[in-house]
Image (tube, rainbow, N blue to C red):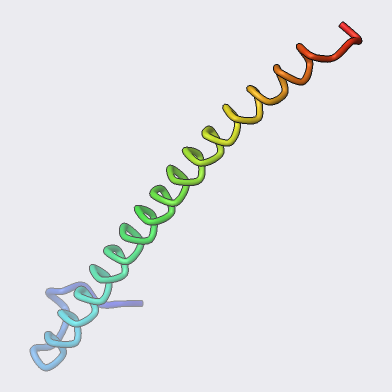
Length: 69
């Protein structure tokens, strides 16, 4: 079980500080990773919407020119 900061001997204080810095870096990595995923999702959704508008236009012209309706 990890020791509380006040229970850590003076010789281990740098190790405790290193562990805290590592935890902060891991948190920062997750923030950057999540922001990247959100950015990718926005780009993908935008490109799908552009393709969808073109597809709907083509489909409506096909259905409009069809003799079935």
